[in-house]
Image (cartoon, rainbow, N blue to C red; front, side):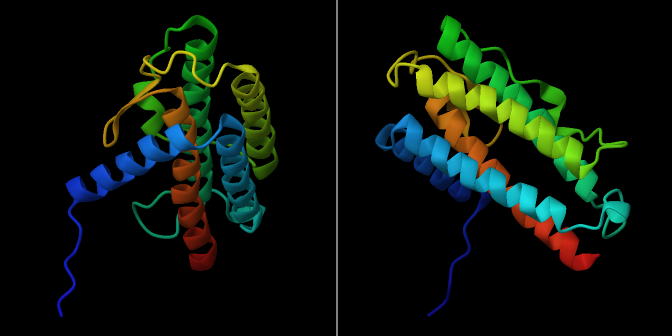
Length: 176
């Protein structure tokens, strides 16, 4: 029996289906718990990299751990602003297009931990205080692979984003 590989379009559709179905099924508190768990993993993986090698890329053209952390922070902060805006005003703030470009110079593990914890604390407080059914018709995030996501789906996306980059950080640590 031959194993068929999934195309990029099939993978994106599968992930979008997961985001939509799970965000509708899970309570905001359950989604927050999953995002917190992924966040803990990211921070632990970052701590496993020797501070003196945080800016070192494991291969030519690859991102360093510093780059990965800067990307996670920029993307997460932009998503947080959009989710909170959606919850508080019923209007999303567009997610910054440049969050895919890392700007990591001088970022340390301690600074990344502080920024991520601060951003997520504000996000989680807003989500947990909100009506779980409010503004689900508003697009909080328009992702280039997974399409238009409401605030609950965007929140759950942060978990997947963290997990993806957790694996990247673990690979960097192993390579270094």
